[in-house]
Image (cartoon, rainbow, N blue to C red; front, side, top):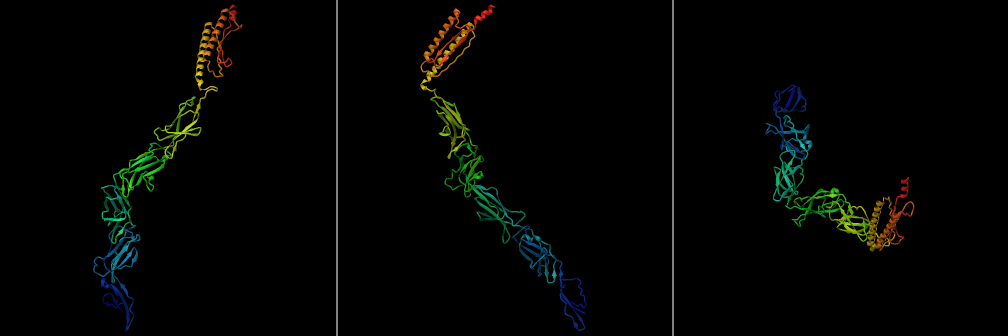
Length: 525
């Protein structure tokens, strides 16, 4: 026969099998047995536990009840057994398929992204067990960063700017927003939006929970207060046309706030290389052409942007040289003009060179020269001097008098030339007249040779010429009247003009008459 013990009640069963019908909570417990034969008993068997599962299913809840959890936040998972209030339950937990050595109804954890597997629980009381709860999952994301937006970054004196702080995704909830100005705490607000009227460097971050869990800092936004003052950009030298290689200075001038310790911002941005100065000295290239403007800054105070000025940079110019004639008369001069195009460019001095050597610098670009030579020029302006390309060269000749004559003989030469010219014209007209009258064909040869200077023969030259003409005319006329010829086949008329000495130069005119005798013989035949 057998003897049983266990559970929470006496067992009157002597068979080797103990059957429990309609198990109740009181049937739970440890069961053991032993055998008996006559007066002999075996030892008690090892106890076997009977655990009675009650028809109750716990629920796992999350506190705080946020759907989006971030790495580093502290949350509490809680196991709640409906209808089991007041009972002394112990709890079993597991994460995914892994058991957790925790027996309380609440389990507090600082989550990481690996905690996203989900949690479940069940209750235990003596030999009673509940069912396992449903798995409650956690969505764990990396630590978020706050985002700061400003509707504008400059505020006029007396105005305000609206700043907005948020945490993405927008589905995450429970945030308060903490504001900072110049890295000092400013104010916490709930709706994440504030209006500010002071300039400064603003940032924010979100926070929630207890203890407070903070997001990453937002990016900083600089808010400046604009003062009603507009600078002026000037160009030195103030030339409208600038050439590649010239050195110019752009300057930012703030007229209304003298003595203030301003720093300056420039457009284009390539000028904003710390420390920012109120002027920049630039040796320009054509790539520096463009619009320039500036504004002043002092702390969080800003002026308005200045009006823009236009810098136009052209390629290096070439000087142009003009000469109104290229020969210098005796005792005279030639005017040379040097210029730089376009004519709108200003500030030029002109540097002159004769035979490759420096001649003289002048301002108006025009000089008079009385010496022959190879002249060129170039323009220059600014400090240090910026030079144009050299002009083309111009050769200037100087006219000199004939050897043995001086400048006082020029009027005499002029008179002699005039008398000779008039005399030759008269002789030509007379010969043409006579040839037409007597129907002669003629050949007129003039040879003039002048070797020496004639100083005072103009009057004698005229009378000599007239005398020679009259004498020949008389000789020719008498010869024709009497039918006498010096030569059998032809006769000639000679006119001789002496200039100065007899050996110096001669002028001859020769007229040939046709052979009349032969013509008459032919007619008689």
